[in-house]
Length: 230
Image (tube, rainbow, N blue to C red):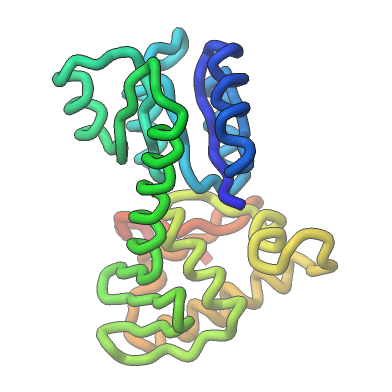
């Protein structure tokens, strides 16, 4: 079941959205922008449903913040229906824009449509000549195949899906191996080392991107202008 993050400062609206959507999705409701962004840092979310008119940070600012670190699709849900507002939201990275009051069936249909588009786009990941096909589990650099183990492939796909996000070793264990699995931190380090070696041998400049964050874990630096410090 897909997981949606609902962000709205009105508890009643969060209750209604959860009531409408829970039969089809797993819903995480947050009335605080800070709490919502912290949740995004630690959990996988398939889509964000975002209100615009909020006291601490408006939805446009939140959308910009999300786009800095995550590729998760965002649907803005708001009473601000002027064309300029809609254009602003889409230009800031929103995938769709739904006006309040909304029709329940239309809301569900639009969410499903965005998720379908996202799924089609996510089958193949391309980055600076590096290509990962999630359907065939094949990886290559400039059409030269790279032989990765399933865990190495999953780890690389995770890094590329969430560029600039710092992953703790615990988070990598839970995401790649699964919860309640007895894996030590050095196993993660060993897999990262092997992944780097294979990417280097393929000719990909992995040291420009896959960075060690000391005391925490690893991140894939999006711009590639910093070196890994090891």
